[in-house]
Length: 177
Image (tube, rainbow, N blue to C red; front, side):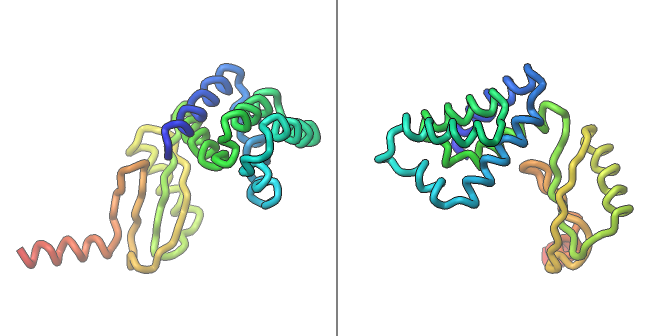
């Protein structure tokens, strides 16, 4: 992700926490992002360099008044329009969410298993990862039958690979050396 998107996201995190509005802003920006993703004409409108920024801001104002966005969300979207970054809203929104999780002390963990696991097992895994990290953990589950069994957990840039496939590879490496 580009540094400029992180800059926007970090500034927004600071403001929204100062005013205790991070949940509302997340909902607003998510709604606007979905609107951009679903409406190709609107997306093309914002990307078109021939259309003046003042026209884009006027149209944005009309959209926001219909949607009833908070002042913070509206002002932020106007800044993105001014800086020609509205087409990067999805990236900024993800960076914003990451910043919010960090401020709340929540760690996002991507968990990959070979098959879907039941709720009790998911809860046990969440508790174990919370104890391990010392933070609250939110889990995102994926399945990949190629790992054969076990669990792969990705926490930020760190991968904890407890898959059967990885264990077999380690045994193979030990036997061949």
